[in-house]
Amino acid sequence: MDSRPAAGIASRAPARLPTTSSITLNVNGVPSKLDIAPWTTLLDALREYLGLTGTKKGCDHGQCGACTVLVGGKRILSCLTLAVMQDDANVTTIEGLAEAGVLHPLQQAFIDHDAFQCGYCTPGQICSAVGLMREGRAKTPDEIRELMSGNICRCGAYPNILAAIQQAMATEGRATP
Amino acid sequence: MNSFSYTRATNIATAVHELAEDREAALIAGGTNLIDLMKENVARPDRLVDITRLPLNRIEDLEDGGLRLGALVTNADTAYNEAVEIRYPLLSRAILAGASAQLRNMATNGGNLMQRTRCVYFYDTATPCNKREPGTGCSAIDGFNRMHAILGTSDQCIAVHPSDMCVALRALDAVVRVTGEDGDRTIPFAEFHRLPGDTPHIDTNLGAGEIITSIDLPPKGFPDHYAYLKVRDRTSYAFALVSVAAALEMDGATVTDARLALGGIAHKPWRDPNAEAMLNGIEATKDHFEAVGEAVVRDAKGFGHNTFKIQLAKRAIVRALQHAARMGQR
Image (cartoon, rainbow over all chains, first blue to last red; front, side, top):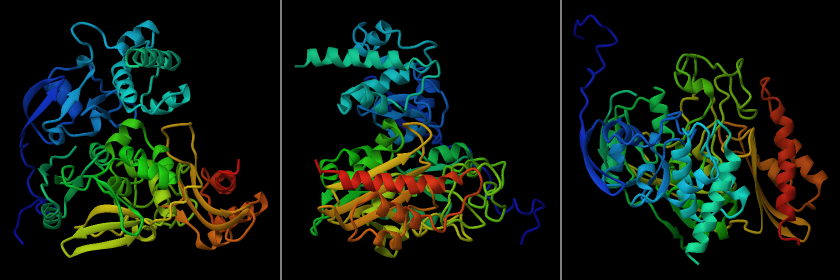
């Protein structure tokens, strides 16, 4: 045994400096190269490195849904995945939903139905609802409620959120007969 | 979160090798539980081996008529898979009773088996916990234990396994296929998870350097008479207080084969062979089902806040069996 004074600590390797990885994230159709530490979540990469602060950090533990984004067209929680794991992924955030200055039907429906109060959960709600509509599993109000249960709204705007989603579904139903 | 390094495995052998070389390394796939545990400093791997790009992402038929669920298929893709929906609807229902749509889109089948308990003391590094720090004691036994186990507990740990999917897999007699440096082997689902005993820090019988490659379902899927009943504090997006997977084969009003597994009440998905055997050959009546419920909780022990689960489990068993028996009768 050596005679280093810090017994017990001596056996542990010294803390390493962060080693960054070079990754590409395709966010809202725009590829961005990032050099980031492995512990950077996708949420932090979007907000802190790409300046896309539309995606919100609520609980940061996967319990509130505020950080919901679409990866490869599917809704996921950006707080519970590492940016390095999403290298080359196609990510859609709330900033990428409107096209040529025209709001996405769900964005418009949320305004029409006053589907928020403070608005903090809204980007996550809308991205989640985009995923819900793509999945095509929810038809009835109860099914929409069940499949939107991962998005918490502490202002309690749920009835209006439900109405907004139903409106967007009805509009889409007419657009694609 | 602690500092760690990250590597992406390009084939299964590399992943196995990396795990074997570094006992402080952890695999990551969906990440929905592990990243949370790392943020809380409960899990402190020094290296993450990302296995998400390994070719374990298919659901395929087995020659014996069963179905192979790749370890990396997401919970959502499994629940909505046509073969699963038609041949193993109990499994589909159980998966969809858990978590949220976003989490099911991320979480993988292998990860569902490997998730840790949600015991609040396990998550709270300021409190003693034998599962997190062996030998420090259990804060739940005399603490807030509303969510905790009533069966199979030890004086070391009363945590519960949080999965819904695993309750159905236990009922269906699934088999877990794993691979490691010593080769491939299979683990019957009943033996995959462990009771706490004196080693509550060890959740499963998966070897230190082993990787789950698939979960294999036997041919028998009980598609005609099944129920997954989950009782919880809110209607959606909450862990079970008690859950029941019931699967029956019926000849008229007579039960000819039965499976009964419970979640939310033990350190592993719970099945009682003696109670289950009572179902064979009986008429599907409430009285008979109540006797089965009594038998399941015969040795149950409450810890104060969770003592209500004993009565709740009995009633949930009866209701799930009644629901399963009634299916397809009209």
